Length: 395
Image (cartoon, rainbow, N blue to C red; front, side, top):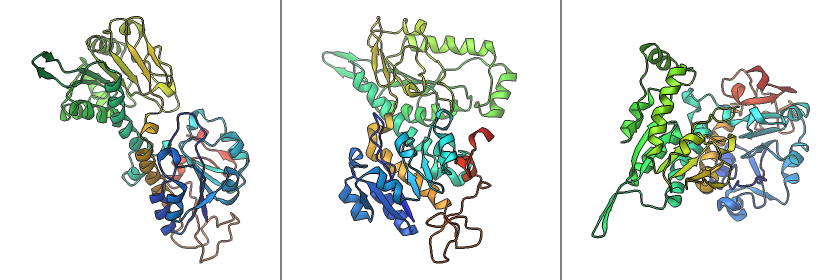
């Protein structure tokens, strides 16, 4: 059974779905791998390295889709490639399911599509498949380096004969995986770091990394609600939102660097920084908006562009930071995919094995077979199309 790798056909995307090391792992599982020529070049993986790992090289994406049962990708497939798929094929990637316009087409063609972003992150056995965490970890690190490059002063405190340099003041809005890595990286560079998040539990994490928690007064009732939901499903009161905005506004007015990380699956990114706050910030201050690809946390942000306000504040629309670390992010992503693909393999050829190499369902006991099980808590969560149906609507 063949697994195919399609070259990314998206601007600002340098990652590849499978690396040579991942090819070796899949070969050991019994798969063959076919990769479009040049697919790994932007991530510094040559065709020769794939061939050395046991993969075959295809001259075009059409050759990959014609031969492979499973198609792996970073972003969703281009429409021309998606239209060429046939019943029984499987697509695995970060498919942006809530905004994906091709799901109906996948369902009509009989394609099973797995969106890796939908992985249940609370499952311990799924942690090694968590693409959001693996990519966000790298993004948080790189966001700080982007800020350091844009900022016209150093991060750490310097004591020189020419004068003293004060440490940069960094504010992180959103303390998930990316935010925590950004805090750690900024501290390593010598900055003074403050952070804010809706989840009260994040305070301990921030302080453990040496950051200062931007505390917002909270009623006992609100504290209990936020603690019970972990913050994610918590709806704060209007007064709390107002109080938090005031605390954040004050911190940003004194900040040199601001990094925003807040994103909500299937929705536009929440607006955290408004024009009124931008107008109070210092000339030369830098904002790295990591949510630029989904609308941005900062008012006036433009994806993949750097905007300078009238008062000299630079807003960097960092829509796809992991692609800037293509070699490492591809390696992490490929490992995530390998672990997920492993869950699709039937432990042995049995009547319950639903598909064989050609999708006929008549698997030979000596052939590698797949077991697609929508009752499985991982497969069922990731499958957005299967058996001619769009499953996203069922969530």
